[in-house]
Image (cartoon, rainbow, N blue to C red; front, side, top):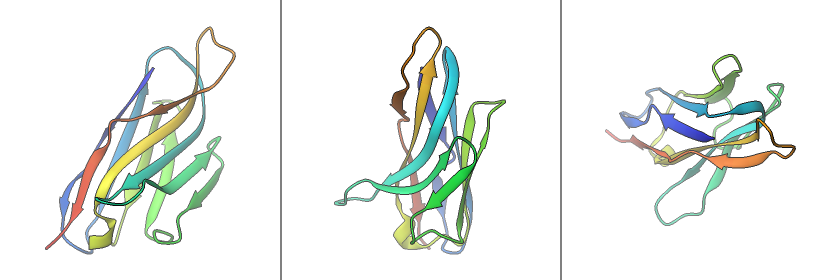
Length: 120
């Protein structure tokens, strides 16, 4: 079971990006999904989380600008980022609690990270 993140890149302030994170492998169920980010010299922080595809929560710094969503038919979680600011520059990581086939316990899986750079 693994997560593959994509969609990062260089964007000007005020621009938009959409990150995607695809879960692959022998998956029975996906519980929580979330996006985190880590800027140089800083700790990794929570950006947005989606609980069971219903409840969403966001860091105060991204509320109103970022939207987390998921497509359960594709085992994919998205992060739509609008009105990007230079302080959003970071490596973005996806995370999911996944129940593999044949297992009775959810495991926490991390994607490899995708770089987002906001600069003029």
